[in-house]
Length: 219
Image: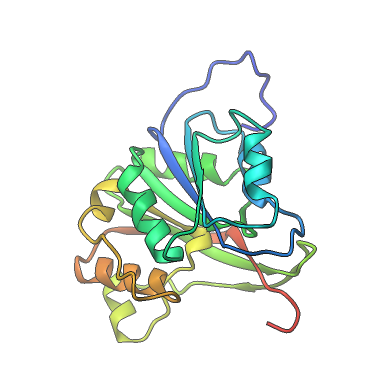
């Protein structure tokens, strides 16, 4: 756990996990980068952490350049947007379980450990999803979006699929539904979930927020 002494040997029950962070071209440089905060927060020893920066001007590239080793791999240049960055990242990752965040969203403490334990206990699971907290610009929780624990097939009938902030996908399932449509600059996560729903994967729901979506005033 996060409180364990650094000298304590860790048991890898989740494989080499992959966490992606996409950083847009521009940003307000407010509490940026939360992906560095997220990485240091989790304390889980087996994390493959990739950052795909879209040539941002918010200080992200400078932070990464000045902090060698804080992530596994990163790049910073203009790209075709979030969906292209996700496709690039998904093609590069090698981990057994994959999740991603935008640069200003984050995972909660202990989430990697909780999901790792669940994945080890139920190896047939292909998706792990939980609730998603909505936080303001300061990271204060304002509400929580709960997810209906329904079979994924019902996502095709109008049930809203998981938010990516609280979604973890087994790599062998992800490989069956990528690449994503790069013409989509929004809701590519919905497309991903609907493509997975057609395959009727085995899913585990956690009745707790796993991550947070940052919502700014006026947006």
